[in-house]
Length: 502
Image (tube, rainbow, N blue to C red; front, side):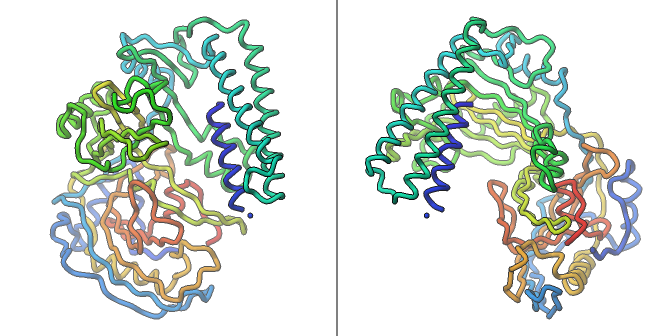
């Protein structure tokens, strides 16, 4: 909590400083309990069962004038590369969310911790409380020093900004002192050691692995979204589509830092490309992948496949030239016919509106695993939005590409504004698209919450989704179900909330 509050304080400081409907050809519901029957529909329409039959050397090239109701688009230009997955078959896969119930928590925790010994971490020990009090006192001292500099005019800020920071620091110091008082009251009756986990109704656990103390945390943002706390459309969306994650990480990085950087302050690690190609980890890349796959299989997540591999680099934040590459960062996701699915679901930023209320929503729907480690052990393990496969329909057929292009062109000509994912004041006249991609897109079962189907979908866009980031709020997408020809409601699939006003 103290680290979070310190981060929030810094964010506030920075803010203060820098402030001076679709047209479709068929009505096929691909969320029914029997996807096999729907897939047979395409056989009479010259359907394609092998994506390699699609000519990816061609470029979809066309342009035409349109009449936008808002008047900000008058011309559409498509010059799009055709991108398809490297597979000769396509499937539809049904999955459901893994529930964070007591049985799941207990089973996972006992597999992660040494000898299956798990402790509750909701109740702080005397030592942990004392450490938190020490950190809060240090934070208070730092803020008091800053206030002295502000009062003496040594901060370099103008008088108005200095007053804003003085007020900010004063409030934060008061909050820290209240927190210290609460911690002090807890200290007398706090246990010396953590208590063994029993009913697994909590969301935080602790224990040891290879002599290192690790924390296991479960987080469900849907349960955190309270209508009274955040009313309106955003509160509604968070209750339906919030992320569900668990992560496992050491309390301290001290045991994992390479020898060259030990005893230095401000050491952290990341999985960006290093400045040097040398990786001190004894495992070669292929051995690291094999080790990661075995780890997931032991935990019961063997239905995931490797998505990416990156080296782990430890850095000295106070001296950027000091770094050591030591470890591996692996990302796993569900693959269908060899094609990756979920990581790109975190890359969408979509605009939605309800009753005049408009905002930008960043998707956190991706279901994937991040696993980072070096020779000393696990640095980080996280599973975002865990899913388990329940059914698969093999060798389905999709519509001919020309048919889908005609559907898209019809929508762009007759309902241009619905494709725009821009603020209302957007005005560029020409709307351009550069990529036409066949992807697996996860669609909701409208009748069974928590159940989804991965369906082949054609996506026309001006900026492809970046699995490691996002395409941005100035990107536009038009998605068509490759099997049925229906338009995909991107906002609904990502948020679970119907748009009543586009």
